[in-house]
Length: 278
Image (spheres, rainbow, N blue to C red):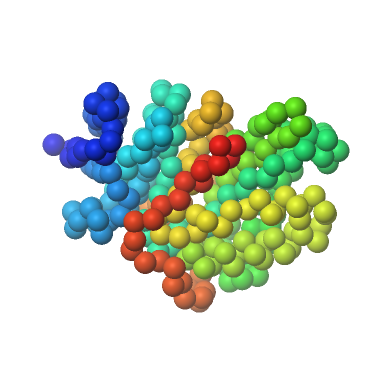
């Protein structure tokens, strides 16, 4: 049997538990390799049998959570695509389960609609301009700090108008730069420093970069998911939207970075959507 199903949480109703187990059984038909679902994100808490599973997805449904583990990145991507395309209330987050990951940027910035129009003209143009700015920052800073190679990136967005006065710019940048959590912070600081001199709106906007997911069991919502009816979509697809190291994907590695002391094997995990408007 290619799936081992375990209870996901005691507080779940029988209906909720049935839905998650039904989703697991349905996905089993499309999964090339084995996968495993649990109620916790930590490999230590789960036991030895999970150590060969390198990819972890946290599924959100009506405030409930379950964790799904995969050996291959293709299964992880297929899992996300199936669930976010067929079930409109479900969101899938990738959980970082190793001590390094593909460098990423999680940016959320609340902007007045007046400033949005003055600086960009529209929310769509804001997405394009800010994504280009962040990609420029990564491509410029990475070689300066020891990541020498072909830098690849992709960007997803879930920007939207909040009300008649404010909008929120929400972007995720994924890269093929392998970095520890301290190195992720180092790169982010360098990118902010580089771009802050370009324009006032850029400096203000970069204050919205979230450092909280840069740790073991940190997480990032995968493209396609919905929250409060708003779906995350891809702005550019030049790279695989995954944080974990994926076989067959060219990675740019830096081996002389600072020691990372923030990687204890605990049970913490971050939701990048804790705020209602995120």
